[in-house]
Length: 67
Image (cartoon, rainbow, N blue to C red):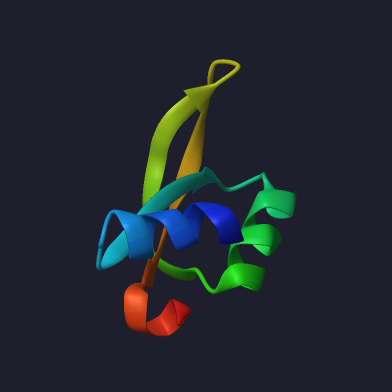
């Protein structure tokens, strides 16, 4: 994740990186929070997984938060 963010902010000169993660994927959520991502919202029943509606957590990080 650090390498990806380094590329996004330094090489591509992006100001914000956004991602989506399913609510039951707690391991990924911990990883994203550890590098500085913050939860910005929830898309309720945003995706179907195995025929069941699941919430999608929206997260982002800003360039000034990363550096």
